[in-house]
Structures are given as structure tokens and as C-alpha cells.
Image 1: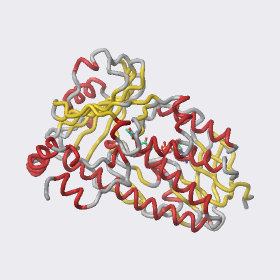
Image 2: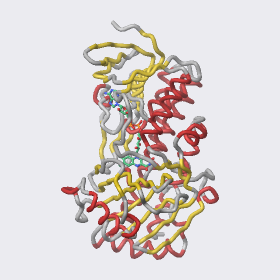
Image 3: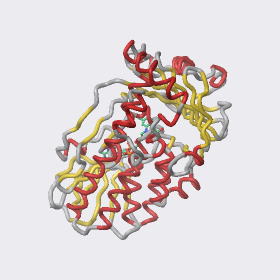
Image 4: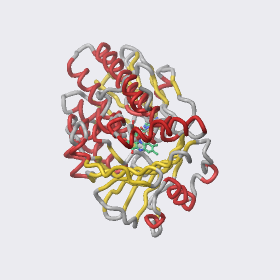
Length: 401
Ligand SMILES: Cc1cc2nc3c(=O)[nH]c(=O)nc-3n(C[C@H](O)[C@H](O)[C@H](O)COP(=O)(O)OP(=O)(O)OC[C@H]3O[C@@H](n4cnc5c(N)ncnc54)[C@H](O)[C@@H]3O)c2cc1C
């Protein structure tokens, strides 16, 4: 039987695993991180941390690190609907946490946070593949490095193994999934003459398209295009850059913006549908980040949720020596804030992305009211799940009051 040498073992050393390892190691816990990748590379992941996620990074003491290593603040947000600019928003002046968006190259962020975990005292093993977990009062993790098989026990195992998490299966968490609706694709582009201090979101409702332009400085942008799957989506051409640029234009991006662009990484497309676990703690195993809830990337909430998970779990573990109670407390809180994000993301998909006569009718009612009074837009995606998101907010959004 494996020896217990650690308080916490995290399966995965991406943002969730590394941030938790750092947060707990700096409070004196013995932490082991098991990460499959020897070097992080571009998997087309989140590169824009919402203002409420920036606030979470501040609360975790990660914000200064991100700024010093990879972060590129974007104080301005331009929003276009059907080709018309409806907002040039000063994010620090108008968001609940007085913060900008923070852009970064995801692999650079991962290296920076994992290095910080090491500096805080966590042991990090890379090139190691976890192959199973046995939940229980002293949960046990099995992993492989080259041909060597090892096992380790811990007081708590944290599943931070991302959107295709196997931890959910090993620890017997039933996984829930929304019906498939949106698709989301992204690519890193160089030589894009976008302003360095402004992100842009472009909606083209009716044709089920959204595009995001997220500058990282020096002419580099992370470009995304989202599609409704019933709106002639280019599934068969998911890796075709020419088609990506064409679809960006259909969402409202000026063709000239990408005219001289060169790809700086892979182009990939993902299913948007949320997958999640209710109550992501059981039997000595807690799930954080995408393993707990992979939210639709269209709405850019994933890294903010991940940091919220880390902060919530850290605070519970530090406050309560009974880590079973702490795990359940974290899971109950997770259910509450994730439900808010999930609900509001769904409203935005209904109003801005759905296609067909019913959706057109919805928009005909809601959009003129929103144009006249933009406070009808709930600000949860920028301001976080503590903002009101009840039925009265929903009715104002859809113009149904
Ligand atoms: C196209 C796209 C765009 C996105 N855009 C945004 C955005 O703009 N803003 C935003 O906030 N979020 C965005 N997200 C979401 C964001 O990327 C995720 O929420 C975030 O990366 C989750 O971090 P994580 O640590 O939970 O998972 P991951 O980053 O996936 O990390 C999991 C880690 O676990 C490791 N691992 C997995 N299995 C094993 C194993 N068996 N053994 C050892 N190691 C293992 C992996 O190698 C990986 O390093 C986007 C996602 C996608 C797909």
C-alpha cells in the first residue's frame, strides 16, 4: 500500500491545479502536483481573464505574478452588434471589481503559475500520467512515469484535469451535460493591426455568429469565432484558416483586420455545451476548474470560475481542520455560483446566438429596449456571480416585464 506523504495531491497542473498547489503550499500544506505535460503548448484555451477573474487572481495573490510574467491588461472593450458599435466600455471604471480584462498566452500563464507553486514549496512532477484514483478516507492516486508505476496517498486528492477529466469517472461523479448548441473555435494570429488596449466582441445575431478579438500586444491577437450549430457552421472545415477569417467577417470583423495575419499556433474547434458535476466533492476527492464545470467558452467564464474554485476550496481547507466538512462546504458553494454563471450564459445564448423565427421574435422585443437602456444587460459575465441574476433580471433582459 502507498505511503501517505502529502496533504494534497493535485491531478493536473494547469491553472486550477497549480493555483491550488501554490495557495495551499504557501500555507504550509505538503502538496504534490502530477502533470502530464513536460512543457505546456498551445491547446487553444482561455486567454482573456474577465474582470471578476482578475479580482479572484488578486485575492489569491496571483495578479502581480501574472502582470510580471505574461499579463496584458485590456482596459477597453468594444462591442458590436450586426456591424454597429454599441459600446466602447472603460472596464476599470464600469465593472464591479474596477478591473480590466487580462489577456495572456495560456501556456506562458501555466508555466508562471506552476513555477510559483514550486517556489511556494509544492513538489511538481511533470511527464507523469495519472491512471486512476481510489477515493476514501485516505484517497490513493496511481500514476505512471515512463514505464514506472507508482501510488501515493493523501488527505485530499484534487481533480484539476480539465474538460476531458477522467477523475470524474474514477471517483464516480455523475457528469451532466447541456444539449449541444454552440461551437467555438480559436487561433493565435500575428501581424494584426488591432489597438493594443482594447478587446472587441462582435455579435451577428440572426446568423448565429460571435467573434472575439483579444490583443496580447505587439500585433498578436487571440482570435475566436463562435457559431450556432444550426447556422451553417464550418464543422468540416474546422481547421481551415481561410474559412475562419471568412466566418470572422460574417460575425462583423472588418476584413482588413486579418488581411495580413499569420497563424502563430493551431486552429481548433470545440463543442460549447457545458459539462459539470453537481456537488464536486466526495470521499476525499474534490474537483476544481473545468473538471468541476467546463462552461461554454463562448462566454469566457472558465478561468474566472477556476480561480473562484481555488479560492473557495483554499479558504475552506484553511478554516476547517475537518477536510471532509471543508470539501462539502466548497462543493455547496460551487453549486451556487456555477448555477448563476450557467443560467446567465444560457440567457445570452438564447438572445444573441439562437437562430430561427422564435429567436428573431425574442430579439425584436429585447434588443431595442437594451439599446435604449443598456443596464438591462446583466453584468455577471464581467462582474461575477454575486450580481443579481434572479427572474426579475431575466425578465428585464428579455423585455418581458
Ligand atoms: C476554445 C476555448 C476558449 C476559451 N476561452 C476562455 C476565455 O477567453 N476566458 C476564460 O476565462 N476561459 C476560457 N476558456 C476556458 C479555460 O481555458 C479553462 O476554464 C481553463 O483552462 C481551465 O483550467 P483547468 O486547470 O481546470 O484545466 P486545464 O487547463 O485543461 O488543465 C488540466 C491539466 O491537467 C493535465 N492532465 C489531464 N489529465 C491528466 C492525467 N491523467 N495525468 C496528469 N495530468 C493530467 C493536463 O495536461 C492539463 O495541464 C476557453 C476554453 C476553450 C476550450
